[in-house]
Amino acid sequence: MYVAVKGGERAIEAAHEWLAEERRGHPAVPELSIAQIREQMSLAVNRVMAEGSLYDPDLAALAIKQARGDLIEAIFLIRAYRTTLPRFGASTPVDTGAMACDRRISATFKDLPGGQVLGPTFDYTHRLLDFRLAADGEAPAAPRREASPAPVPRVSEFLNREGLIEAAVPDDTAPPDLTREPLELPAARALRLQALARADEGFTLGLAYSTQRGYARNHAFVGELRIGTVPVEMEIPELGFAVEIGEITLTECETVNQFTGSKSEPPQFTRGYGLVFGQTERKAISMALVDRALRWEELGEDNVGAPAQDAEFVLYHADNIQATGFLEHIKLPHYVDFQSELELVRKLRRNVEASQQQEAAE
Amino acid sequence: MDHANDDRKARMSLLAKAAPGGVSTLLDAALNAAGRPDFDWLRVPEIGSVMVRGRAGGTGAPFNLGEMTVTRCALTLEGGAVGHAYIQGRRKEDATAAALVDALMQTDAADMLRDKVLDPLRAETEARRSTRAEKAAATKVEFFTLVRGED
Image 1 (cartoon, each protein chain N blue to C red):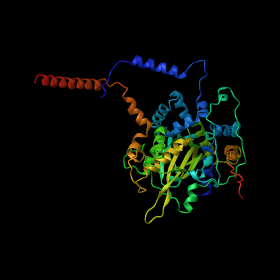
Image 2 (cartoon, chains in turn orange, green):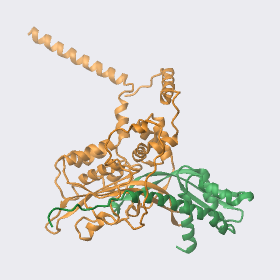
Image 3 (spheres, helix red, strand yellow):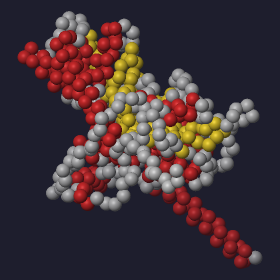
Image 4 (cartoon, chains in turn orange, red):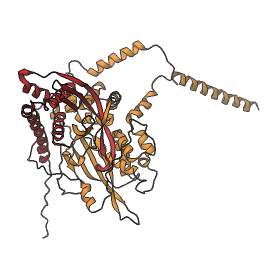
C-alpha cells in the first residue's frame, strides 16, 4: 500500500538538477542535437518508434536524448506523449506489396522476380571495430546503379499460385485496438499482431529463439524480408475520399513454415508474419516466429506447453513499459508494507520460539 | 471519383510528403511580392495521431500497427475556396502552407502554382525516390554458377 509521505522535495529537486548535468556530460564536449541523433542513431530511433508505437523520428530522437540513451525510458516518454494526442482516425491498411524497397531478400528462393537486394545491411560485415569512425572522416557515398521500376512481387504469391502455402485472404473487419480496450484473452490474431508489433525486442527475440531451439519448433524459413517506404493513406471525412498523408519506413518479414494438412486438405506450408515501424529487422523476424508459434490452435497443432505458444504468457509480458513500470515500482517507498511484513515475521518467530519452549518444558 | 477529386487527391498526397519547409519556400517564392492571401481558419492547425494499419500476411485481415503524428488544418480564402491539409509530423507552418496551396489551386492562380510549386515538388519527390532506388539496385545480387569439373 502507499501512504503519502511529506519530505524529500529538496532532495528530489537536487537529484533532477544533477540528472540534467549528467545528461549533458562534460561541457567541453559538444552537445548532441536532435537532428544528429535522428540521422546518425537511426536504428535506435527506429526501435523507440516501434516500441513507443508512434512514428515520429524527431520525437523519438528527443526522447533518446532526454533518456540519456536508455531506450526503454525513451519508449516510456513516447508512450506518455502519445496519450496526449487526439486521434484523427485510422489509415487504410498499408500496401507492403507496393513498397519502395531498400532491401528485399528471400532465404527460400535464389532467383526471384525483383531479385535479392541487400540494402544497407550489417550482414557480411566482419564485426570488427572500425577505428576510422573514431576519427573525423569524409561523408561516404553509396554507389548507384540504374534501377528498373519493375514490381517486386511477394514470395508467398509464387507459392500461392501452386496452392503450396496457406492464403492470407483479404478481409475488412475493423481490428481490435489494445490502446482503446484492455487486452483480453482469447486474443484474435489481429490483436496479437498489434501487441507483438510494439513488444520489447529482447523479449520477442528470446521467445523466437526458443522456438528455433525446440520449444514449439515450427521450422521457419525467411520466405521474404523487405525494408522500405510505403505511403500512408487515410479517408478524409470532410472530402469523402482518401489522400496520402505521409510516408513511413517499415520492415516486413514473412516466414514459410512447416506444413499442416488433413484428410480433406493436402499438406501446405504455413506462414508467420512480422511488420514493424522503421528498419527493425531482428524484431520483424522475431515477431514472425512468435506469431507463427501462437497460431498453433487455429492450425490444429498440439500445445506442447512451450512458452511461445502461451498467448497469455507472451502477450502479458511482452510490453516493456508495463513490465518496467511494475518492476521498478518496487524500488519506491513501501515503508508501511514492509513494516507489516516485519511485524508478521517477528510474530511468526515468537510463535516458533514459544512452541519450542513449550516442547522443551514437556 | 471525378477528375477534380483525382487532381485534388494527387496534390494533397504530394503536399503531405514534401520535405519540412519545402512547401512554404516554394509557395512564398511563387507568390512573390503579392504575398500570401488573407484567409479565415475553418480549423486552426492541430496536432494529433492517425492509427496506421497493416494486414496479416501482407494481404489478409487488418491489424493496428501503431500510430503516427499528423497535423491538420482547414482554411477558406476570401473568394470562398476551401483548403485542407493532413500532413505527417508536427508541422503547423507546413500544414498551413499546404492548405493554402490546396485552396489557391481552386482559383485563377492554379496554373501558376502548378508550375512553381507542384511540379518542382513532384520532381523533388521523384528524385529522392530514384536516388534510393539506384542505391538499392547497386546492392542487387548477381548470382553466377562456378564451372564444375564434369560435363
